Length: 167
Image (cartoon, rainbow, N blue to C red; front, side, top):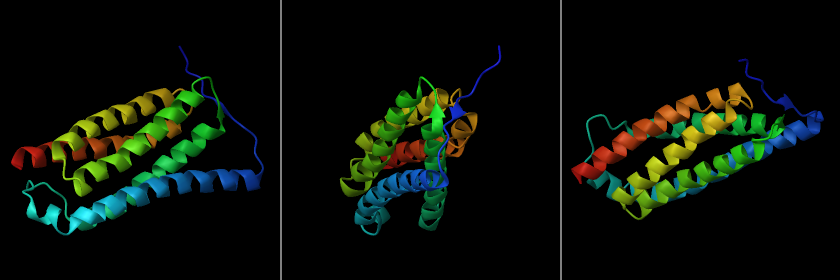
């Protein structure tokens, strides 16, 4: 059985530009919020806790997250342009996972609640994977843009679990 994808809506160049800027802005806002929580705990508390040998150096996180947030924004852009019955569901799941993304930084870095951050991250990973499957029939490219994000958050979940068990 062939799968069909949603047809993109026709927008003017100005409206396309505003839409992509809005998507980038939304993801940048979530990134900024999460990074403010991260900076609160990065230099002091985070340096003092036990971390596994596979913990990446701090300088790796910013470029990885920049790329992932950009890919998330482009994915959302494609979904917003589509006409599909599950478009609203995809948008809701996207916003939830984005909020959970920022919440993780609050729980982990600012509040130092590693166990709760781990539980929250598992829920977040579930929403990220759900978004992938909801979006794939809408616009496959929008779903594929989430594959690196799924991989990174799966890795981060293992990392968080290991940090929790070591501390």
